Image 1 (cartoon, rainbow, N blue to C red):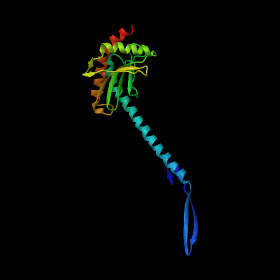
Image 2: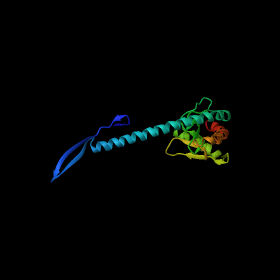
Image 3: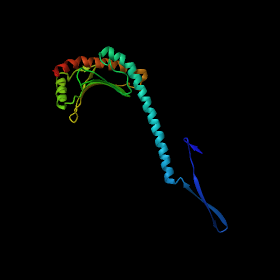
Image 4: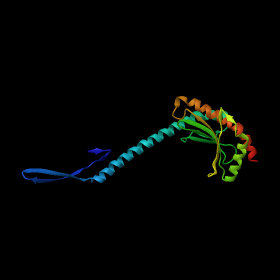
Length: 203
């Protein structure tokens, strides 16, 4: 018989034997051997799982691209950045701050979103210095009723300042407008507050 597009062959060895007046047949599968058959079953199951995972990933990439296609016009209009950025399959977008290694970023998740500023130049100590200068002047500022999340990562060269949104996300297509409004308005206000401080810190 055919199985998943290939021929499934089984060979059974049959040996007769007699017990008194009764005749019996002893059947033993010899091809494929049992261990090989178990392996083949596991291999087939793995391939099916990989196929499903690959399809799910492709669907997710398509959904993200659709989200950014709808989001970017509002982001460009309100923030003044992302003019040279195209929709992507990734869950994040980087936008220029005017300084290499210090991008603004927008992130979409399955159940939320965030905007922020990454401080990630090649100079680890410089990153810490910039981050602390910004934090000293904007630590308690709120945007859209939310406090900024200040994350200085001692073990890494990157430091980040983020504004988080919880509720709707990538999977909530009917509520994308609310998420897009957060991303556009949140990043606009974040830039208005941090850009002058960043310009001063970079002098």
